Image (cartoon, rainbow, N blue to C red):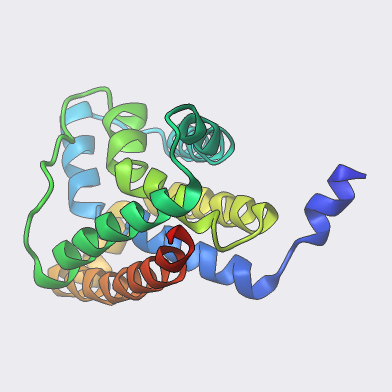
Length: 198
């Protein structure tokens, strides 16, 4: 019965929005230069391994993240507001080309660390997962995670070709476009959840 209820919550609009939001936050296209650098350092990447590791990390945080918040006495609306501020900072990075967060990606552990975590699934992605739980049904977020994990796999498989096609200017434009999407989400999360705190 619970399984039927879980799938009955599917909504294509919510699924599409969640997919685009996660795509913008993960920013695998914008991370191609970093991915290539890690590949050069490590010698080889495993796209399939990275894909399923990112999937399970995101699913794990989606399921357990709220319980962890309750453990510290924080409700999801408070976290959504805090998350909106973080998303605002991330969007500023993408749109303005500034650096507000320290980049810890590096080393030669490659496909899992630092590629899957924290480069692709870092604090921003985890914050977003908890934040959009206040907006969307579980099924739509799970499917969005699945689609993004597949996309991560495909991009890693074709990372060199994609960089050659897009070039530096193309990647820069994509970053700015998805930065604007993130900014819009940050404003929506902030306004829709702030009122529920008072």
